[in-house]
Image (cartoon, rainbow, N blue to C red; front, side, top):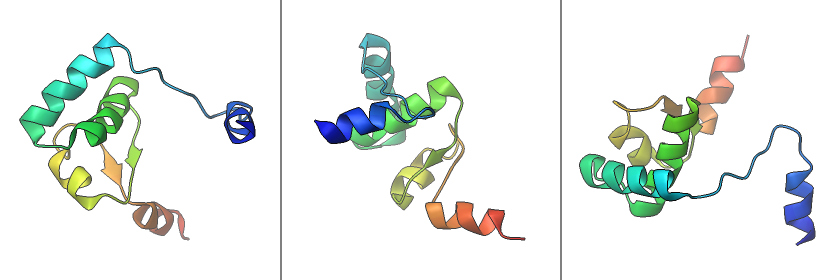
Length: 82
């Protein structure tokens, strides 16, 4: 539990409860975009909060590309190079 407490103390880190809205929308996205159920939760949170999803799952990136902005960590690092 110490690890969880350490995460909670990071100022720009948030735990997002999986409420009914997220669950229902995740199920719809999973079915429509053919995304695995648990992966669709990440896509849904990214969609709701309007943030880019950073993931190593290239299938998730490909299947959700018409819904959210996403990329791999490596691609993000390349974008930051001078």
